[in-house]
Image (cartoon, rainbow over all chains, first blue to last red; front, side, top):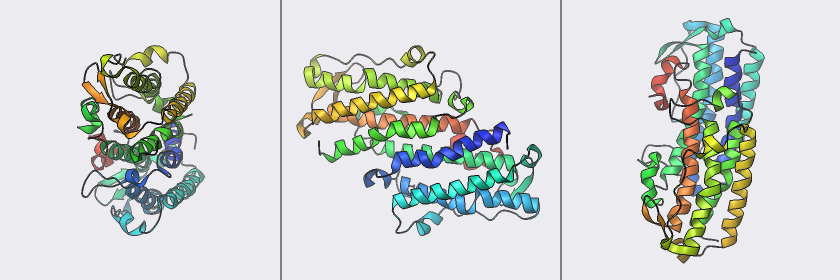
Length: 174
Length: 174
């Protein structure tokens, strides 16, 4: 798996658990349970969502493409699963779980030793239609970054009032 | 310095160097030098900007307030300094520098043992007018988060084309 594309995806995917761990472990609950308002997710919720993705989204979908191609559409992803599955678990427990699942998934991904032609294989997304292995792995990567963005935005906005006049210099507060 | 406000700011400020280190150290240059277009900053540029803030912005301004109150406006902050000061330095060098400066600044901040009344002391921002110590420290905290947001957004957008049809599910790509 020497393709630069895969290596640069793996470089991000490998780092995400440590990034979120450095950011969130043992942080006061006021930060980790903050949301952007009703119906939005806290940093705690985001980690549960990432766990559910490791279990049911990225690698399972990749394996469906490799084994069944476009004939078997992916299962729809449950974007609310974390509210059920994380119940009663501490954030450090969730961070450990995410880290272990990601490590196992990347071990499996590397062991597939995907070749350039396999990156162009297609599957069927239940909502989006035809997608390639390459797009799936790129989305896994961008999805990590989008949730790091969401966590930092949610935390920053908590201080919208606290920063006083500086809010006008911080585009995140707008 | 037992005030919950200060402790929760310190909890974030302490974690930022490790967060950015986990995210960026030894990442391929294609990620760390990516920008959002002309005039925007790469992750590499952001670390240089954070370093300049540690040297000239947050603690120096706090000390101006404590020593001279509103009578001596802060020096304007140079938002382009990193393009001069980071020149020729590797990203790992910058990450080390940021981490050391932040550690020293937080040691100084803790040693001030700020009391609640001191958080309400005022200084004069050259563009914004009167600001308090509390607002300054809140902004230091939110500013870290805003730049973690910026780094993750810049990296995610690099894959706008790569993710194919999934772009419509990722608000960062819009």
